[in-house]
Image (cartoon, rainbow, N blue to C red; front, side):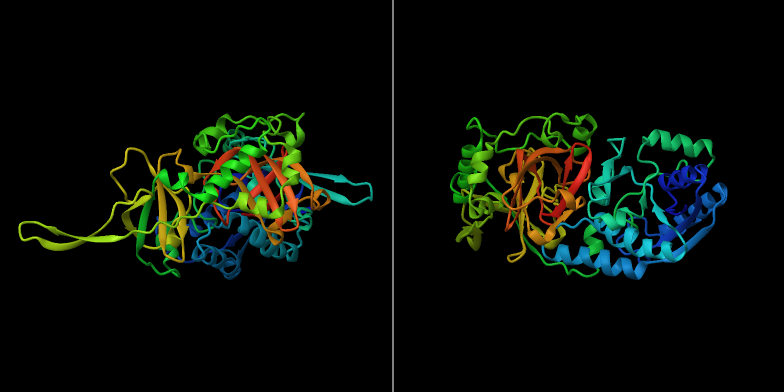
Length: 468
């Protein structure tokens, strides 16, 4: 069969091409340029030029034809404009997910097919399997990569069965050191090339500077939220009461046990294949109680705490000349502790770039209010504002990689879920209602952010995804 390999100049796609060539396939490499602008990039160079040069040398070394295609206009419309639009609404997009769905396995795939390809192969660390159902229809599965530290199935969570029918992932059964070894043994020019970082095809960027190409800075307040706010907040009390009611033993945690995603992922277990969805343990919540909740109750449970802290001013006299000045009155719920350049430049869970000192522990963004251009922050990993137990995906945002496994209204299932690429899989209960899909985690999650993708797995198979 004829296979087009998306040669990026990196070691992973290079070894993918090498393996396919060794298997006897008719292989050619196709490099796509998706970005010209260097505004906001930390290197300030057109990295794609070097990547193209390396990709061409790899193709020559392997002995396969090499082609080039400029998809920058498609990329701008379907990935970058999506990014700007999401950030302008105070949401946090994932351009890599969109790049795979809209560019690599759509625009790029169409180009490859025109060049005579039967399949498109990439260097993603994931696996694909195929089976025939009872009706004789071919069904495609995406499985996590063997290398759990490099598994990239999350980034393919938007692919359809049609797209998967044309996709190949030749290195999903390998671990990264093995890929490096194969590249070195074949003397590939990309063998020692560092992994790419940052936004897909754009590179590592200073995000605020990058976003300021279209989003104008606008100064606003940074408000620190104190613990007292939650004690008197009706919605937070509702969350506590409802989760405790749903808990099988009446007891449930409201705060995340914080471990960094990278450290936790390196030590995470695969779960227990004997449990539903491969979850590591039975649910901490009572399924009958969950089923009895009305749609309105589940919707409230999925909503984050919102902040409405009013600050009153008072006048006072200062210095020997008793100059009249104005200051904010003490507020038990919070304090204005700084200024920012625009709420659209920040995301929930962020701690870098706030430029706020005077705290014992790290300060994190816990909410952004676009209407008032206010950022709310909290001190410490265990701040109540960082943790949530439930999220909602609207009906139009639900995507089933396996349409044959789509949940019906009223159905409840157990799956393992992640809301970020590097996050270890988390045990969760999924509840399908007409108003959307609700994901109730066994343990509260840190930094659930609108715009991110929640992805659910049955053991090591990715089943579906949705935008939070």
